[in-house]
Image 1 (cartoon, rainbow, N blue to C red):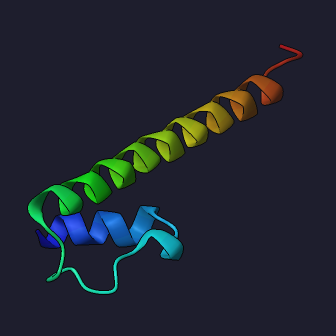
Image 2 (tube, rainbow, N blue to C red; image 1 turned 180 degrees about the vertical axis):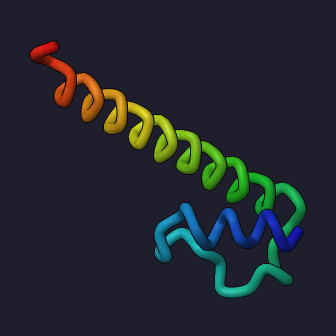
Length: 62
């Protein structure tokens, strides 16, 4: 659960964060975790695309 809370706090905007994790049901917690995990995957994809573009731009003339 602590890893799930860390992922939720890291990748979701504070407007979506619950006031208390103790008051969440099992389904609510895993719904938030799923949203955060998707946001994490999208951020990783954005970073990968940026790195690939940077490499392509640096070696464009070669």
